[in-house]
Length: 194
Image 1 (spheres, rainbow, N blue to C red):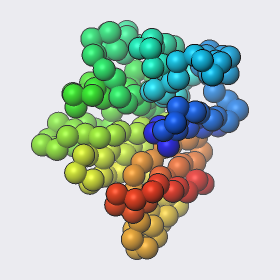
Image 2 (cartoon, rainbow, N blue to C red; image 1 turned 90 degrees about the vertical axis):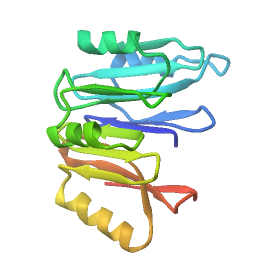
Image 3 (cartoon, rainbow, N blue to C red; image 1 turned 135 degrees about the vertical axis):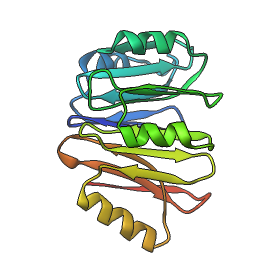
Image 4 (cartoon, rainbow, N blue to C red; image 1 turned 180 degrees about the horizontal axis):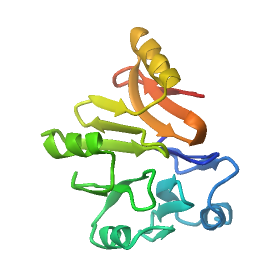
């Protein structure tokens, strides 16, 4: 799994081989862009869905499409050279962009996440945002942090860590649903969904 993203009741996975899978509930324009693609069409390389029917998809040919987003997001995408990660937060204006160079752009993130991004000297690898203020950040050194997650998710994370698993990614959906991707350090990824 290269990307996993959730919004409402929808879940979308993008795999290393360029394939993708999704559940019901994707924003209709994104569903059409993915569902109608033939095997010869460029594969998606970056995907994100979020609250307020927002989506972003970029294909291997460099074309990208998005909808339901603020003018600030439009400007950020147009000023970015090579996007490798997009995440949408709880407000219709909140987003996070990560460029291949490691540069980031973001607006209206939870305050504690913003503080981590502004004060950390480490290079960000990934950020995931949830519809109720949940967040996850990982850095290229393998360290990570999350906050505003449910007690059930905290319990699951603690159990995984006690068993020696390393958290690789998280995605957050409506009603405290989540996905945790985990594995051994440098090992094959596995995951848990609730």
